[in-house]
Image 1 (cartoon, rainbow, N blue to C red):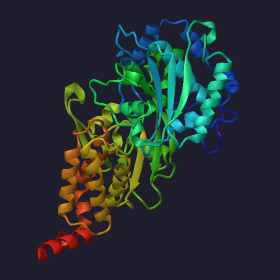
Image 2 (image 1 turned 90 degrees about the vertical axis):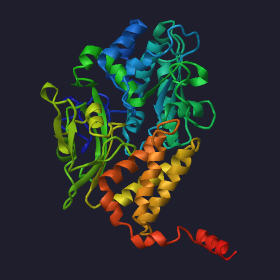
Image 3 (image 1 turned 90 degrees about the horizontal axis):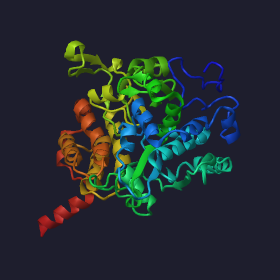
Image 4 (image 1 turned 180 degrees about the vertical axis):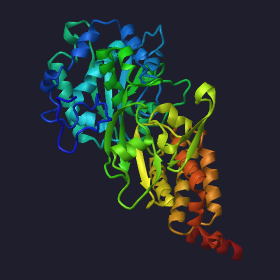
Length: 470
């Protein structure tokens, strides 16, 4: 990577391993197909065209690639869920919705390196037998949508997409579909419903696992932008070689998006698990702002559970000889399994940092306002509960809450968690559960006992008085 020059202020940190972001903010780079071909673009597709589809899938399985969109499910395993005797059309959907607060990595790929994504998608279509693919992109990315349309047209002009790809008998069409800016469309079955022209109400799984019953009730593979880009590199270097990057069960690289109270926020592509929380926040992001100290971090986008910076964790059976292992917050490796063992998740890689200037009641209210607005409304616990939680935290930040409101807030969160069709229930309830568990005293300090006797709203108080007189 030494021969590549990057724009001033955008040079990679020495701890980075640029692969997916190799061309992002690169001097002399542009998103045209000619520039991409000059840099060796579509060579991996040429290689894949001579491979059996099952061999491509096997290489992805050997690589250990886990989805970069949030759940971290093994990509090759997902591809293998297509029914073996399927006679229906197979579809590929690229999830470019990127609606998780704190996440902004896919946007850079779409704007600056669209052909990397297209090449990864065509290789994936070869592997799973798809002849039609969709890029579902959020409405707030209008320039990215235009860039993708141009790139697809360029790829068709060079015979990398369309009829008879590279002179073969393999046909594939890629279409850009712009969503209407709903968070729930990041959930794969809600996305599929939207793509079909319906309200984005997530489907019940089972039976509606997309690989079996997806778009138009046909087998459908849904992968994130970053995940599909990795496919190109896996074919280029081989699954075994790719698996040497990162750590066991957490292979390859991933892009971390750091925002909030650090001196140098931004994106960082690192080998999975090779960078600790301390190295990321202090060495790569420059530490806290002057005169401040780090207080808390949400490591995987707003739906991930918050972690205190003064915490210590006990990892069961992960020490020498199967003993328990003690781990401080600062020593957590940035990988899927370690963050899960510490009670949070790697999610979409959106690392949101808070220093000691942040009041947790304000943080929680900010999160609750977002999720109350974004609930699709299909499930009663989400539809009603997310709004109730927002109303309670509205009262807390306004100084109108009583201590018992914290208990009510916690109770509402528990009544949502695990009781909805899709994971939106957990997305809106986990931040509440975690912040109350770790900052209850701070939240209670923002309440007043005398507020317990106050009316929640003037209209209800007027009605109560009217009924008493009657």
